[in-house]
Amino acid sequence: MPSLRPSTSEHAPWALPYIEATEAALAASGSDDVVKLLESQPGLLRKMLAGAPADIGAFAYAPDKWTLGESLLHVADTERVFAYRLLRVARADGTPLPGFDQDAWVPESRASRRSLEDIIGELESVRAATLTLVRSLDDTALTRTGTASNHAVSSRALIWMITGHMAHHLGITRDRYLAAR
Image 1 (cartoon, rainbow, N blue to C red):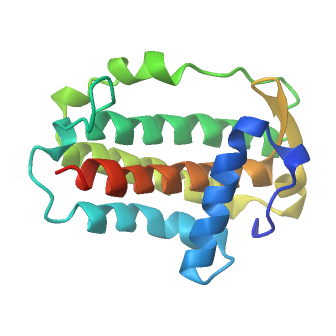
Image 2 (cartoon, rainbow, N blue to C red):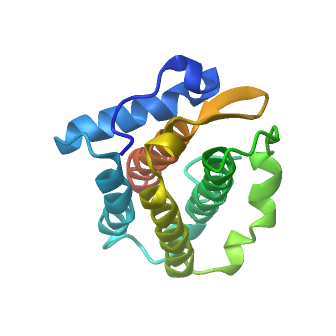
C-alpha cells in the first residue's frame, strides 16, 4: 500500500502541504499506514464535532471565510476530484486532467440548505468510495504517473493528497471553527 512518502517529482508544488499533513497525521497516529488513516478520518471529524452547537455548520470564523458546512462540502468535492484523478492515473489513462476552481464551486454547493449531519454523511460516503478504489490498487497502479493541473502526479501522491487535504481541514475545523465558538 502507499505508505512511502511520494517524492516531489510525483506531485505539484501546491500539493506539498497536503503531503506534509499526511506525514504529520501518520506520525501523530504512530503508524505508517495511510489506508488506516483514510479510514479513521471521518470518525475523527464526528468525534471533533460531538457536542458542538447545532448551528455550527452555518458558522464562518471570519468575514469572507467559508462556513463550516461549505468547508466540509469542499473537502468532499475535492476528494471526488482527486479520486477521479486517481482512477484515471491508476488505469493508465494518459489524458491530461484539468484543474478546478474551488472558489466557484463552494457557493454552488448550497451548504446553507443542508444540515451538518447530511453534509458529514456525504463526506463519509465519498470517503467510502475512495477507500474502495484505494484498496483495489496493486503496486503497478500505485506507481503510475499522469498529468493533472499541468503537473505530473502519481497514484500514490493522489492518495497522500486526499489524506492530507482532509487532515488540513480537520485542523482548520478544530483550530478555527471550534476554537472560535
